[in-house]
View 1 (cartoon, protein in one colour):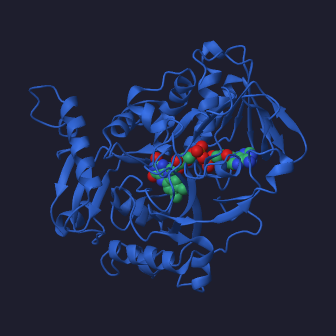
View 2 (tube, helix red, strand yellow):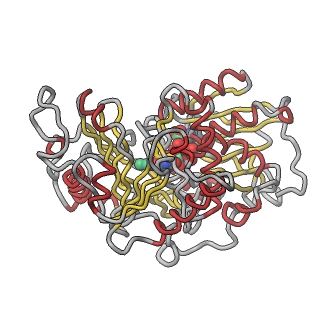
View 3 (cartoon, helix red, strand yellow):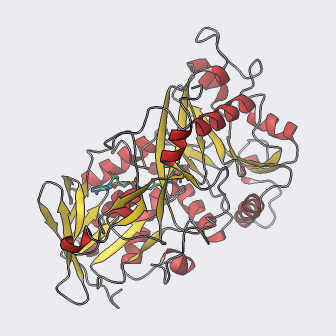
Amino acid sequence: MPATPPIPSSVLIIGSGVFGLSTAYALATNPKYKDTVITLVDRSSFPSRDSSSIDTSRIIRPDYADPAYAALADKAQELWRSSEWGADGRYTETGLCVTAGAGGTNYGINSLKNVLDMEAKKLSPNAKVTRKESRGFGRPLIEVLETEADLRRVLGTGGTNGVQGYVNWTSGWGDAEECMHYLNQKVASTQRVRRVRATVSRLDIDHSVSPKKVRGALLDDGRCLFADFTILATGAWTPALLDLRGIARSVAQTVSYITISDSETRALEKMPTPLNLETGLFVISPSANHIKLARHGHGYTNPTRIPHPELPLEEAYHNPITVSIPRTHLTDPPLPEHLPAEATAALRSLCTSLYPPGVAPHDKSFSPLPIAERPFAGTRMCYYTDRPHCDFLIDYHPEYDGSLFVATAGGGHGFKFMPVIGDIIVQCIEGQTPAEFQQKWQWPERRVPEEEEWNLDGSRGGPQGMILEEEYKKGGKAKL
Ligand SMILES: Cc1cc2nc3c(=O)[nH]c(=O)nc-3n(C[C@H](O)[C@H](O)[C@H](O)COP(=O)(O)OP(=O)(O)OC[C@H]3O[C@@H](n4cnc5c(N)ncnc54)[C@H](O)[C@@H]3O)c2cc1C
C-alpha cells in the first residue's frame, strides 16, 4: 500500500453486492472524493439474482465468538435498529436462538460471553433491569436455555433443533433484497456513480511495468473500462478474476423455501431464528408467507479449471488453475432445480423437528398439509466466499503498486455490516484499517493449503469436504 494513498481521479468498482455498492455510496458521499469519477460495473441488472446479497432475509446479530466482529456487528445493529437503515420493515428484531447438542460448542459459549459482556457495558452501573425489561418487554435480553423444554418455550412451534443454547432477543433479521434496493436508491440519489452493466472477463493488467499495474477491466463485449484505481468486490466470483488459491474460496450453501398462509405467518413471525451450530441448520423467522430453511455449513466446492486470471493472455491458457467458482441457476448450464439429496434430507429433517406435524400451527383453510410435509416452493444455491478463518479480505493487492484493492470474503456473515462497511472500506483504502481488523483483513503473507488449516470460525456445522458435482451425481431427486 502506498504510504499516503493519493485521491484517485477515477475509481472502478467491480461488483454491486453489499461490499461494492456500499463502497460506492461511501466514496460518493465523502467530500475528499468529490472530484473522483466513480464507475460501478456489474454483470447483472440490479438486483443481481444470484449474488449473495439478494435473498428474502439475512440474520443480523452481534452473536460472534470473536469480540472484534461482535463489537462491529453491535455497532451496525444499533443503526439497523434505530436509524433509517432498518426502517419500513427492512429490519425486524425477533431474536436469535443459538442451539447445539448437550456439550455446546466453543463458538456458542464465546458468543454468549461476548453478547453478555456488551450488554453489561450498556447498562448504567446501578441498573437492575436489562434494557428490554426497562422498555417493558418483561424478559431478559439474553436468556440461557438449559433444556429442550426451554428451547421449545422460546421457539413456540412445538419443536426445536437442539438440546440447549441461549436466545439473544436483541438479534434480528433484515429483508435483504429490500435493504439492497434501499442502498441502491441512496447511491442513485448522489448522482455521482456511473453504472455499467457488463461482465468483466479479466482485469486489465499492465505487465510491461514493474511493479505491475491494474489499469481497469476488460469486458466480455470487447470494451475496456479504465481507471486509476480498481476495487474488486465480486464476492464469490472473485477467484475467477484473481488467483486466490490458498487465500479465499467459494462454497455453495443450500436454501429452500416453504409457503405458509397469512395466519401461519402471523402465528410464527415472532419466532427467534434457531441456528444449530453443530448441524448448521437454521430457519429465519417467517415473513411474507415464506419459511426459509438453510444450512450455515461447510458448503460444496465447485472446482473449475480456468485460464490463469493474472498472467498475460498468451500465457494464461497454458497455465490454467483450478478454483471453486459459482455455478448457479443462472449459469450455463444452470444448476438442477432441486438440491442434492443429502441437502434435501437435512432441510427436511430440520423442518420436521421444528414444526412437528400435529403440533405446529397450520392453517387448514390454506392447506391440509402440516408445514413439515409441504413441498419446497423453491430452492437455491447461494455462495459464501470463505477465508481460512472467515475473515473479510479488505486490502490492497501487494503486487499491483496501489492500483488494485480487494473488498470481499464476506463468507456467511457479511450482509449485516451494510450500514457501516462502506465507510470502513474507504478507511482501509486510506490506510486507516481499524487496529483490531488489521491482521484479520490484510492480504495474507502466505497461502494456506485448503486441505490443512482451513478451520473457518467454528460457527459452521454439517458435513465437510463435499463437491457439488459429486453430490448431484449421488442421487436423484430426494423427496422435495
Ligand atoms: C445462503 C447465504 C446466507 C447468508 N446469511 C447471512 C446472514 O444471515 N447474515 C449475514 O450477515 N450474512 C449472510 N450471508 C453472507 C452475505 O450475504 C455475504 O457476505 C454478502 O452478501 C457478500 O456480498 P458481496 O458484495 O461480497 O458479494 P455479492 O453480493 O455476491 O456481490 C458480488 C457482485 O459482483 C457481481 N459480479 C461477479 N462477477 C462479476 C464480473 N465478472 N463482472 C461484473 N460483475 C460481477 C455479481 O453480479 C454481484 O452483484 C449469507 C450468504 C449466503 C450465500
